[in-house]
Image 1: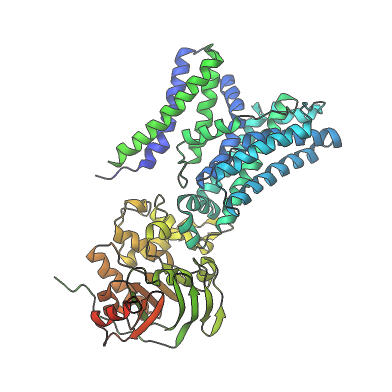
Image 2: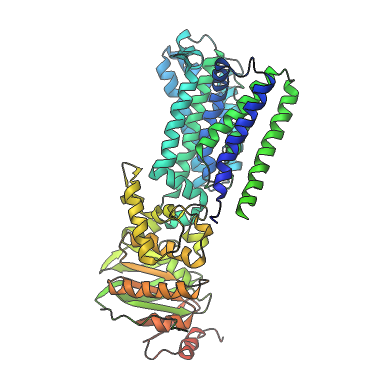
Length: 315
Length: 256
């Protein structure tokens, strides 16, 4: 008999889980949950986490982790808003925000690769430092007075689809292409799977590591801009805690925290599962206090099922 | 039982291709000098811990080393595996799990990992050419796999070793450094790997076989160097080499 690969359960387990959750809420609340407008709402609510999770996935594939993405959301939103208020030019504001995100991401990558500080420690430190920089920059006050046209990024629609969902879709497709079809994508997987063998295959390890943190920082900045635009202000504490949801989405999606294995469709599904849980439980009038508990339990169950399934298929 | 070693194939040994002069990497080996000829199979024998493995890694750029290396008379500097790869000097490491393979990826990806420079265009992998390249190697080495999408962790030791060997074949090697090429693999695969070594030598590839299996070194090599305590303690021709003679050289310097 042909031996079953554990990749199978990793890949399709999460999709089964997604259908299960959808079926559950559709049954519980058919009137509100199972509608097109609610699907768009969920997509919109999931888009920020999905952007963060896609960046996070690049990092986790190299056996790293990026805890600084939440703080990065806050800082890049603030920088973008601050620059727009100062210059009156949205384009310069976007450039500044994205530049800061990518730049600080690169700093993470340089510390991890060249100074060889473990990713967990590096990004824990930068998470704290970046949150502080945001408070200093904003003086602890929200930045508002933003031009109305800036709100388009978070609140606008294009052919009936929320703009953040369009951004998320484009980023997802590009990331999928990169990971599945390019030389660079192969290098990302290889470095995470076995860093020493990758070096022995002539891969420039440091550039791969620096690049994945840069991607993560850039996407966090993109998420930060969308968040500021959606709220209409740049809150100094925006994005706090978002890193956890992004990691949860990646892990739910079946990506190995040890690196080298993962499917990007799973990551998107993971982000949607978290979004649907939030949405569905709110529709069912479950107290937000309980929602956090349920979310935690679901994530734990999913990961346990995946590792159980893996063992089962391997035997 | 049939012979453990295939009949020796006549191969032409050409002029000097690699010259290694006084290379040192403390505390593993020091003042090592030797030369390698085109199409030659050079055995480096020694007991475990004699420094020969580290010598192989250093020649490939995985370890810092002082001293000089000349390729076809030109001085070269190898500081990273990518430098060695550019000179078409390749290492098949002793420990394939830590240095040779990405275990959770498949045969195809492992095969192509060092070869994506010519298997891709504008950064995109040329899937068809990649497949062709993998299939050619798999057939040449007679690697037993269910498909090129099989994860290498599910292969036997011998087939894993063939994947490691195969990685370099697509780049037409000039010098192959094989560190314990048959450790922990079955007799059948061993035989095929010996055949592979002869075939490569016949094609003019120069091969360094680092091994602690003396029988292997004696049977394969055109010339044998023996190392002990990080130094070369002697050179033998395969005609004069016996296990006793090699062993005597391999423990020299250990008495004190």
